[in-house]
Length: 365
Image (tube, rainbow, N blue to C red):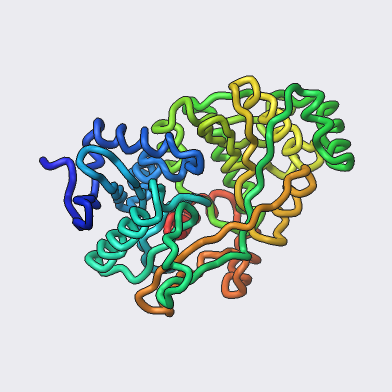
């Protein structure tokens, strides 16, 4: 079996290809290229796209630009298809970043064109980039829609020690952390099957309380399995009962708490405050220097929460290419069209929410 399926040949004998995800040597080489890029993150890595395919059924496509044996750029995507939310090629599905990584804008443009050729071949109507390099001509072309003011990222350096970390938190939020430290809370860290199950139970209740359907549990299982030591779960316990938990990714010296939440009791115990403070200290002990608080929608509750921790928002740009303007997906839970669903979803019994939710959520991509 060929390792690559050619998509396009361009000037200077640069080729843009679809990598064979079953070829471990080639995937490792692409991953090495991605890890070498300072603006890369866990969502750019092949294992993210593969975990999404294996857990949610969204076919993974990994495009690579080469000059001979040298890799010049890469793009990992999933073809997300849902009867509720439509069809799109997404980089990266279920991620808040992703997109093209390339040595220069010319290579990035060739990858973008090759990706669109693939989208058209598959009969898809849209392609979503949630980060990465946007070729210069994208900003002036009518077939691209740019969202520049809807999302923001939050990150800052991790402090030298625990006391310095505490002092780096603004006074009001610092007081909440100090209260949490007095609440007889314990922390456990790992990524075995038991911890994944505990985390999912907490996370599912947390998102149900927000009126949002939960992702399939298999998504979390596959992420923990494929990312290995680059992923762990930190869970906060009160009287041996798990009350808050976060699944985090580690990438090039940065920690990103990604899927996190708490049960109702967590709020009064300030378990979420304990959770993030403990993660900062754990990440420092792992050798991390950056705490990446991830993306939030502008003016949302999560946006305000991260600002309260002393993180400054950095505007993010997402790019969508459309065959038809009507093909743009609406997967924002804050959209007015979903208001009634959110209202009633919060009232669903957990067994019902956990049974129905994954069938809906996996279509969000």
